[in-house]
Amino acid sequence: MVSTRASAVKKKCLVTGGAGFLGKHLVDRLLASGKYDVVVFDIRDSGDPRVNTIVGDLRDPKQVEDALAGVEVVFHCATAAPAAANTANKTLMYDVNVKGTQNIIDGCVTQSVNTLVYTSSASVVFDGKDLINADESMPYAQKPIDYYTETKILGERLVLSSNKRSGLATVALRPSGIFGEHDPLLVPLTVANAKKGKMKYIIGSGKNLMDFTYVGNVAQAHLLAADALEKGTHAKCAGKAYFITNADPQPFWGFLGDFLEPLGYSRPSKKLPWQLIFAIAVIVQFIISLLKPFKEIPPSEFTPMRIRIAKANRQLDCSRAREDLGYIPEVSIKDALDRTVKHFSHLRNPDGGKEKPS
Image 1: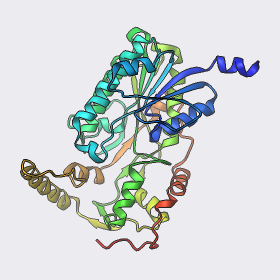
Image 2 (image 1 turned 90 degrees about the vertical axis):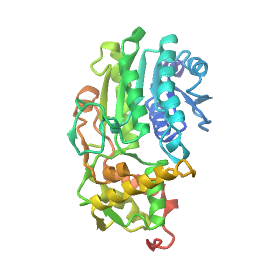
Image 3 (image 1 turned 90 degrees about the horizontal axis):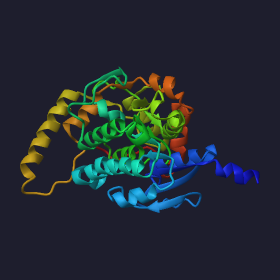
């Protein structure tokens, strides 16, 4: 009888993108809290027998509305990230990240959902220039670093402007540089470049700092935000955005070396003047633009904006999240790196540090 009553008071929550990187960690955290009955909504099966998975598409308003029936809290993590073919697929990114987010909001209103926690991105304020202890008073980037970021700005605006719509309380979280177990981007792509001999170089001085965030801490922040929104649309955090970091900025190139080296790859060490590399990238981009009408050219990582990113400082102040949400990152950068390296041991260099010569 006790367990029946305990389960009866649990809140039903929906995690969009629950089969993905952050989604998996968030589901683990939600189940461990004992406070939620978890439903996953994703374009693919989560394969997690602990939860009810609804395979569906954010672009379909009816599927979204049906999935939200009986739900009290939504964690909207799903996104069309700028990876692989998605990089050039602006239609997909807009339809998922903007229209899909609108479908979530509309579905929440129709189904009387009262809490929406949206996963945004710290890049919404970054336009390639240095950020030093930037806080949430920073305006959105006038020139976003890519189209993905542009769609995240639009999605965040929709979510925050929907606070108080039919009793819906909303909040947006802006994690920076997410990494950890099951990471599909940062670690695998950096290792892949190391195998090609592309990670020996540092663009610029190598002193630029960036806020990275362990994925488990991002999941922690989502639960804290949902707790804070229990007060409804008048909660202190309602209608606001919050930077989420490990509050421990790392040298950008040094951080990459911190997981490359334990996996048997060389740390970036050879410095290249960023102005020269930037100029070359501009020329390459110009040539690609000339050839584009005549030849199908895959998206390149070697762009002027990518060069700016690699040499820029991106330090964010997440004190507002500490004050309003009670967010203090539970896992340190060091412990998070240890967990990440252990998880990706299968990517260890079999040649013991002898990468492909560049």
